[in-house]
Length: 153
Image 1 (tube, helix red, strand yellow):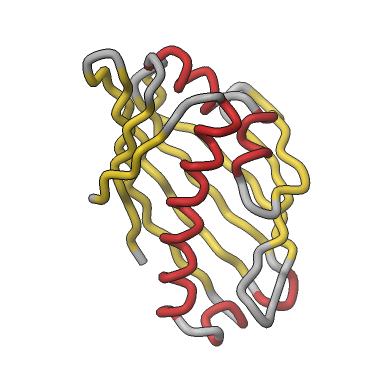
Image 2 (cartoon, rainbow, N blue to C red):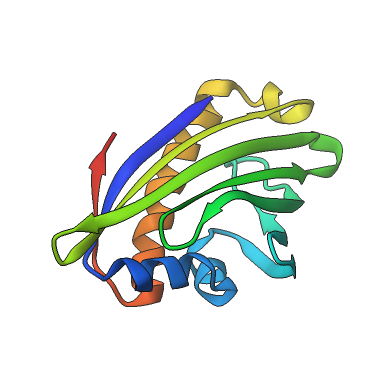
């Protein structure tokens, strides 16, 4: 599955970058996030309750940042463990750049799952994932005090 989008933040790039690395801002923006903590310079651990409608598994996971160019880009890779529902994994490429007095964020991601999660149906997960991503960036802007406009892919 592939997801992505472009988001215009009405804030300077330095503020968007700082918020992308702030666990309190991320916790406020991630639906169902119970916990997110830095465990190293480029590593995070989190726990999320995911709402797939009829099923609401709790995932624990590890995130790793790589290809980091401060205030410009990074790749975020992660694996989530959902108990009997199986595993989910993904990677996201995030690029931020100046857009006049604002910041343009480009987001592209791939993800997949195995076990019971796949039995829920790829279409259901795909539709939910894009809504979750768009909602994340809206809540992320709210958490950092900036207006965000989704511009599609």
